[in-house]
Length: 197
Picture 1 (cartoon, rainbow, N blue to C red):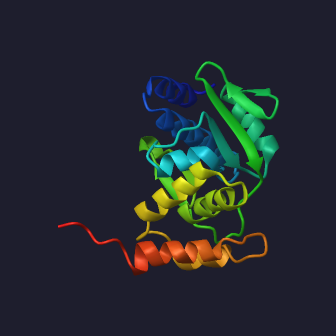
Picture 2: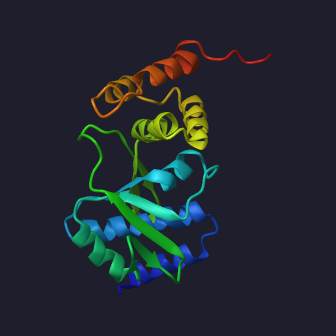
C-alpha cells in the first residue's frame, strides 16, 4: 500500500461526517482507477441522495455505477475491502460498496463533481437522474419517503435543475414520470411559492 493511500485511509478514519467518509473513499477509489487509465465510478442511490439532501437522508453503503467490475474489484481489494455476498466491505473503516449498475442512461447524463484537496475528486449522478430514480420509486413502488425526497429536492434545486433534460428523460419508453415533473416545474419554477414578508 502506498503512503498516499495509507494517508487517505487515516484521513477517512478520523472524518466525523459519515457522508464525508463515504465521499473520501469514493475519491480514493477514483484516483486508483484513473491511475490504471480507467474512468471514474459514478455515485448513485442512497449515498447520492445523502449528498444532495446534505445528510437529511443517510445510507450505510456506497452505491456506484461502474462497467469494469474486475478493475474496480482490484482497487477495492487494495483498499482493504473484502467480498461479502453482493457487497464489498471494509471492516476497519466500516464502509460498504455495492455496484448495482454498470452505467447511467446516456452519455449526456448530467454529473456532479465533488473536489477535495490534494486533487481528489468523486463523480455523483446528476440531480436530474436521481430525481427520476426517486420519482419511479414514488410512483411505482408507492414509496412515501421517495415522494418526500422528490418534493424536497425539486424545491431545493429548482433553479439548478435542467428541466428540459429531466422531462425528456422522463418521457423515454422506460419511464412514465414526465407529467409529474411538468407539475413540479410549474409549482417550483413557473409559479414559485410567494415568500411571506
